Image (cartoon, rainbow, N blue to C red; front, side, top):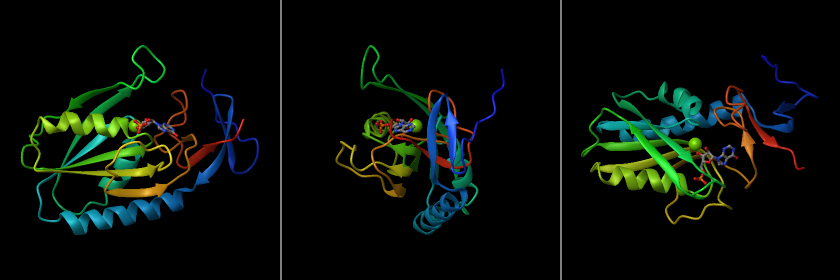
Length: 188
Ligand code: IMP
Ligand code: MG
């Protein structure tokens, strides 16, 4: 059955029976996306750039960011699936869906959110074998409190607390990705 998002009161929403509070509005996101795109346009003009979008969560952020990139570039996709709490906890499966040659190019990995950093680390490991000239990372959201790796992302939109968020590409149990704003799971 097709279900409408129920909105118990202004600024909150129900995703799969859990209450989420509005956290980042479309306007706030737009401002940040514009700022990051401006920096990338300045830093990378004249370089041979391939943007590597990490599916599924980064699709919405990447669509907004990439239409603000004003130089000629290529776009490819990579799929990352983690198996949190399953047979091999902490293991991330990476599937490159790229036809583009990355050798000697500047690869810009676009992530929705960086939590522990394990996904990013796995992607960077996979990329190494393809000999890119340089790898940069962009994340709309970054949870510094849960981050366990040593190298921080190069471009970050919002640093947020270590709590669960949904919307704007990010899902809760597979839902909420199509919301235009970002919501924070209310404390249980
Ligand atoms: P990491 O490997 O721990 O950095 O986690 C990264 C991946 O976990 C992200 O690409 C998301 O798919 C997912 N993730 C982490 N935190 C959240 C969250 O708060 N909401 C939704 N997905 C999240
Ligand atoms: Mg993701």
